[in-house]
Amino acid sequence: MAIKVKENPYFQRKGDDIHVELPISFLDAILGGPVEVITLEGIEQIKIPAGSQNGDYLNLRGRGCYLGINKSTRGNFFI
Image (cartoon, rainbow, N blue to C red; front, side, top):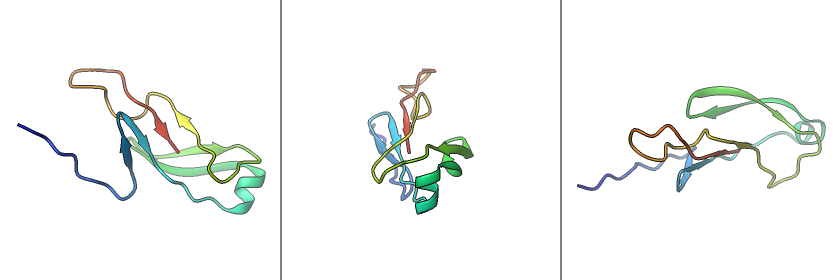
């Protein structure tokens, strides 16, 4: 039996990791500050570092997909 995971327009799965794109304003990129992001657990507030550039990412370690059935370890969540 094969299981196929349905694609999602927001969450992109790459292996056990989850990737999302988070558009932020020019001022948020320059000055940094808190923004909201949707994670697998719901909406969370994260801090954008001052001086962020296009293509930079934040890594929420251990917040991606579970590595298997009955496993507690998880991949990462990249924003």
